[in-house]
Length: 235
Image 1 (cartoon, rainbow, N blue to C red):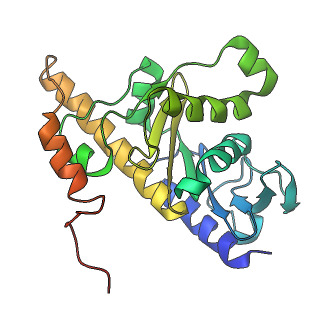
Image 2 (cartoon, rainbow, N blue to C red):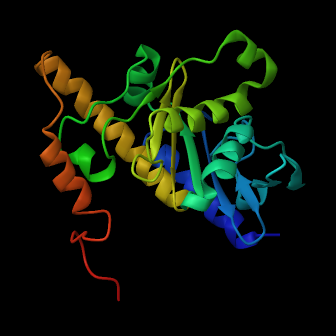
Image 3 (cartoon, one colour):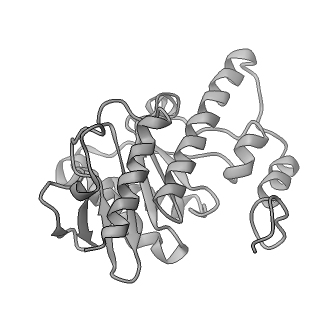
């Protein structure tokens, strides 16, 4: 079942250690198939060096395992809630990492401000940091409630998940998403890089302010939206 998708998800997961986003097994990628309404995700706690595409686990949007010999990632319910809320917006891939600079912002309970054009090219505005879950939310359904928290936080902030394809979860780590698994990983890599730049920027100038809004708008909209002109026209 979904052999090509399992191969894609495996290859997207392998990119996490390649780009230095995970240590040991601290991360996972999934991708959603809108035709079958199933998604494929990395198995829980399996080493990247020994993992194969056949180890990937097929899940439905009710949280049922449809195919796979191994347990799915423990973060599966979070991925599931993101797909349920945003698949119709084009979110077809989700990644979770504990990449060090972005996770440092998460542990500090801070979003990543937009200090420059590298950030603005990919994210419209600050990458937000969602609050920590309550004890009740943690005890009842930790991973599922993490998904609800992410979705609710974007609604509270009136923030478009397509325009800002990442979030920090306080005291936890990073979730990013995209049009497929590879795009989600791409956005997770950029999240880590802009976090690294923001940290160094604040060390160099503790009084730094976000980039001017007109500069942020210019860089975001030249790559995104109806009037984007960055790159080559589709052939």
